[in-house]
Image (tube, rainbow, N blue to C red; front, top):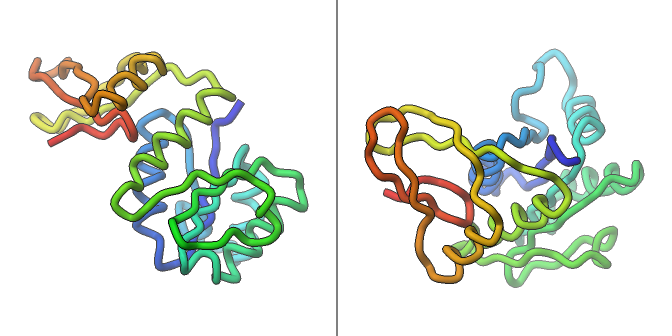
Length: 186
């Protein structure tokens, strides 16, 4: 069962890591990386090792910067050393580090990052039963919890380039949710 995910990324890709963490959080999955919600009293290396060890999966964001990042390579090496499950997300034109070049990555372009997030979520759903979705209403701002749509419903909406329709339980207004990363559409 996957409940915690460590996101390995280059400093320049923090915005991608934050976007991924937000999508995972909407599904009740905890995500972390070296500088995220860790006690400042612990050194950087300890934060990284603790974060990876306490996670169930390492997602490696491999962009041009990520493929050159010593930090990303070291985090991948540590995860490999403890036989951790690793899923690489690779930006078009980038190269996988040699320790994970045998893995099948999830490709993305900067404009299509939500597609990669959706593919990752689909893969996680194959390992883990995810039941709940946290949605922040774009109209009233309240956060509500509802059942996660079936993967078949998500796949149909994604293929049809439509959203998943729901209703805010607070203000009773309709909400359309992106089937890839479960963010409310504006």
